Image 1 (cartoon, rainbow, N blue to C red):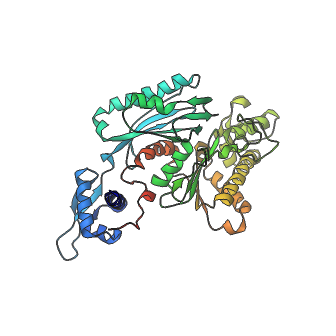
Image 2 (cartoon, rainbow, N blue to C red):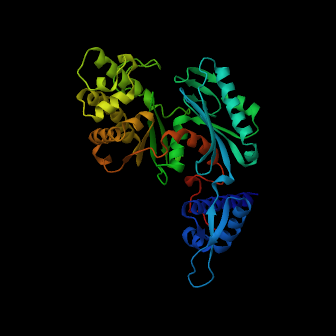
Image 3 (cartoon, rainbow, N blue to C red):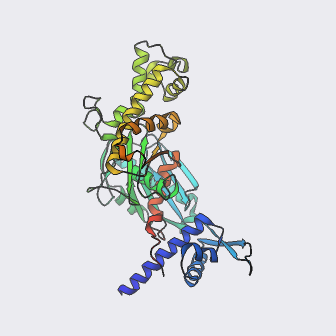
Length: 411
């Protein structure tokens, strides 16, 4: 029995290895797969035939001859398997059907109901049902439903224990979805999902140790250590926005003061800009904002900063320096190879924002760490959470995620 289980594991690992090589290097011939994977010709032939039968790979023509017959080329078929991804947001939630490369085949967004957790869950169920009904012909190819949600989850990743963003406690999300859908369901914190999305399909590909940091109305992080999401002992790791960076700072809705989220996220920048306008500061922010100070947008602040306005630059840099201090602490603690910076606020501030963060971090990390990390922008951008939600499902399919198919296992 144990021998059969071991043989199945080896075959699954080798299938994942071949599928990834075809995905990343295709069109590619069987002979090239033998050469690049070091698997035996027989193993490659048998597994490729199975992948062809399952529709995951297709033959797409002939390659160049190296002296004998021209080889048949193989290409990955990402639409052979699909997932429903759900990105739960505060301002907007999105439900989509995605393929194995993170491409969106169908998507719909809605404003979540945050007044009542029962209606909140019913909305999610309703929109998943709608999108499944709209593409009923694809149902047999859908592997499962992946949900990325803000907040703390229980250890089994079934219930939302607490979410300051959503304003809910004890939301039995898994149970509600399980009652309505026969598909496998995977739920994780949105930052973990985003980190996994960047790891599998974005800026973190082939990086084993990374941290994804998002800056929007709040700040969060997803931590990948040795190719795996780090959850912590109780599943609550990654609450980066609730680390204290200013002991006497503004109060946070978590009950603490001076949390990174209230010192460096978008509302902090807006609040500082309102304060400066209210006291009559001479600033170009006024040139880009014609309404009342309380109605100012991040765009006005960014435009003034791009115009070299000292007040706007001071506001932006002060907040980004708090962020950089937090990131330097992450680097000193975890020694990641990459920090991936994303979120709508960092997108709006690009490239000024990331340049400021890089500069300040370089002054704050310990000397030995200065050449061991890189800080890069998110590659998936505003799709990171929805793509990440799909990878919660895809990561269990044929060892799709790179780290689940270690190349040291051979036959």
